[in-house]
Amino acid sequence: MKPNLKTSALMIALAGTVALAACKKQEEAATPPPAVAEPAPAPAPMEPAPAAVSVTSVNVGNATGADMSVTPMTTFGVKDKIIVSVNTQGDASNQTVEAKLTFQDGQVAGQQSQPLNTTGAGTTNIEFTNANPWPAGKYKVDVMVNGQPAGMTQEIEVK
Image (cartoon, rainbow, N blue to C red):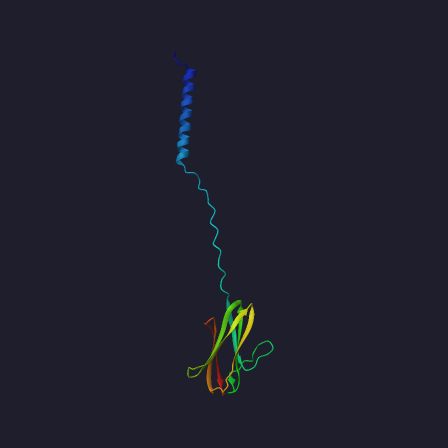
């Protein structure tokens, strides 16, 4: 049997279709599938930051007011009590504020600390007394929070 023109044309069309399909499959195989974005892992829970508190001012006096403030003084009598009033801003929990009184020759005349548990603005007073008269001379008052200098130093004199 001789192939007729119709059958030949049909066979050529069928072969072309198979060839195109094969090329299309190779093209698809050569093209990588689009990347699927995986969801980012959830961040690890953060530990709460330590409470932050800063010293806003330091006043040294010999008497406190009803609001715990002291009238600033620079000269004290030998029998005066010395009150260091530390004003803070911020949140503090289980921290300490410390005041150190140093005589002009470098000897520590007193060092005390108070617990610091505040939210917002607060005032903490540290009182120094001496059973004997204070030695006359110049003193330096340093304030620290949790053992770190607060950058607030006052100089006073006892006469």
